[in-house]
Image 1 (cartoon, rainbow, N blue to C red):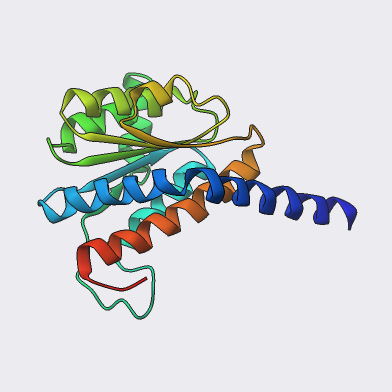
Image 2 (cartoon, rainbow, N blue to C red):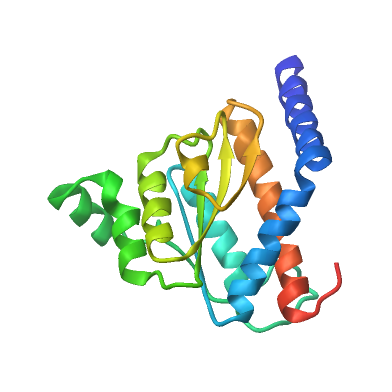
Length: 193
């Protein structure tokens, strides 16, 4: 029981720190997402492991909706971690680190947004995707942890969760993601928050 309580306490304290010191970044990131969506752009998400699940989760919040009372139009978003055939072909024919990069090259357009999610900031597949997005004049956003680098250097805006504990960083990322998606619903679809 002590372990479970300590885990919840670390998670709550980290989220409190993020909310007190980084809420402004989340608002700015949400405004960047809304600008793109309101201008006809789309949002691409990428990440590995648990961050891939977060990428799918956040894309679904835009495509469908986050809040039940928000009966709104679908907003164009796509997780790049969905296609097992393309993923395994890329890993077999090239290498895994180029997978998200190739998808950004194929699907990304100027004015779109790429949200790269990495609990360490060191995921090369995410770093390469962010770099490719910059090359296409996309807006690059990061949900990062640890020191954040090298992904942080490829982001126009990023939330850097001040922890290297993977689970706690992921918990902060999904809370931050929900906050941003609620703001995007408000900015794009006139729903109050």
